[in-house]
Length: 341
Image (cartoon, rainbow, N blue to C red; front, top):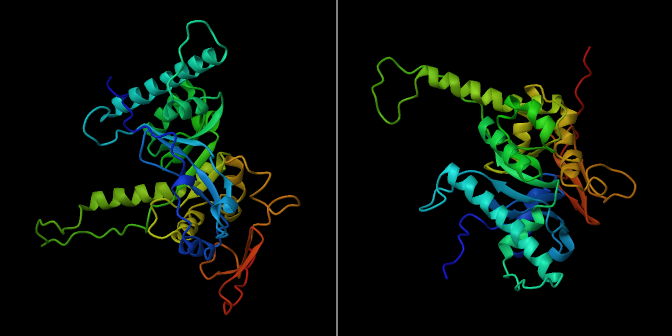
């Protein structure tokens, strides 16, 4: 018999089984002030579930906070030979897989109930994982950047009764009303880089691969950059849950540079801090354990030498999983900004 088409479908993938507990990986992020990380597989129509882990450096069995957070999906073509290699094909392929998962789930239920004439269902980790994600109003992560991608993700999620959380959302500002009505929130990626420079090409510059783009193209690139940076402030102003992610950044520490740029474009500093602490804990369903300093919650605390949005501030102390880490012992306190008149 021919095998089932499972291209782009790895919903059973668990990062816990593949993550290497490398001390350097956690140390670099502790020095930036991170006490917990949300690790996400990506690149497939159904990539698998996220993993929430602390940066304590303890053995994985002690450091994992949640072995499986939410399943992650995307509706992009996979860029591979053969079906599905188009947007329409990818959507149809994932839709069929979810329909198969519903049928498989019913098959299992009938067999468990010893219904007459029902054969033993096949063992299928892909369908089993998809069936688990099909619980009504189950939160799920949807990778979507552009306005059209976001609309497609929300349409597909509504069709299958998912409660979507958008990952990426660089054009969320263009779909705020619908996102507010139909999504759980946004994990925004802030990998927009430095502000593009607009430099008119020299009059005597000939055409060559190193020529600057036309002035109009450079201006549009700057407009697009400004829209992306201001996007976070508009998401927060609309009342959506907002968290930020480091995917696509050259260094994880560049996250704070991006947040400073967003603050300069209208994101309130307290909202930026919440996007690193309270809001991601709420989105991941762990607000009772993480996100704020309260009695009964995990004692994950980062102490800096000044306001977190000040580029001069350094991490001085970090507490995670009962362990204390100390950094930048020679760093001087950064004075708070002067109050406005």
